[in-house]
Length: 486
Image 1 (cartoon, rainbow, N blue to C red):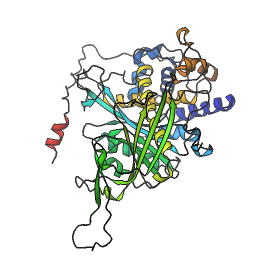
Image 2: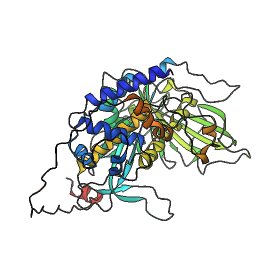
Image 3: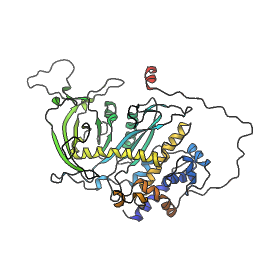
Image 4: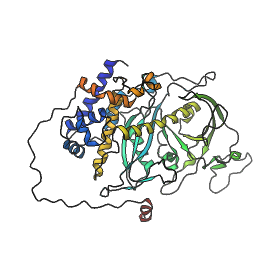
């Protein structure tokens, strides 16, 4: 991309951001720049030491407390700069090449949740037991705190950039009495129903992990005709084929029959013949070759639910994919096969290769969460106020979006021990490299924030003032919520 055009777009993004901040816009703007340019910060208060932050450290917490951000700020800021996937000519599968396409001809959205551990925040409201993976074998993967749902655009790979980039569009805290998947469904709905964004009136695909394959989530999005959902399913689930009445059968009274023979993922005898197959050959970054076998069964059904509201899932058939990777010796490279569910009215427009490629990009969300927690202090803000924590999550997502806007302006600055890495030899720009060079970019562009005006020393509290202690909050347990609900 032209450097002049990239510079102009970054300036437009920053000006739009500055104009959309109601309170303490100057402080917030410099704080976002500090987050974007200081990967070595070990706490939030250390951002006051950044070159771009010209204010005292106490103003950081005042800005986080008083900031007012529009609910759809990120998609409104990034919408004009999104590159449409329909402008690119997607590479169709060539049987002789048997490789993946360069681009996907649809908008690809990813949704996932990540924990915000707050084990020792005894005065923080609405803490609950949330899932957190652990590397220690035998430990329960849970922690005490909050969890946040994030929706991001998963763009095609660009020349000169690593493949781990995402475009964050929305983030929201999941309340203890809320369903995390339905919170993600509401975020997707908000993006699709926004007429200023292209997702609702063009072909879009969303990808999610196993928790997003339950009927409540899948049924919530079937009102969107242009949306196709790809979700992973557990290998112990049972689906059904569509009921096919016999030719000489006479329709009688009673409830209609919707489901036919069972399709148990754990029982190969129930699978029958596949409707479509595909063989791919992949090469890992370490040079290992793999053979990927994809099997597909069309027009399967899952059972719905009646409570708390009817979910007629028999009206929404889907395609089921079974994906197995084999190494060079012909052995399974993974412990168990990967099962994917593809549902939506336009699901037949997706090839097997496109469905497989789309789901693989979902892992870029994991890279985004790891980068945010390690380099942006995503979970590093310790506060007893829920609203401040939510504001901080918004700011970190904005900082990452700013790094994405500056991706074509950064120079490759590897550490001495990183020079021989494959990505460094190819001069591929990652979020970490943009963050390292962002201070130089800001010095050249300047900032719309006004310099601070010193107004003297505040008198502070009156001598002898004692604040009442904050009340200690109990940890919310899901089983207690269900027991108290009518």
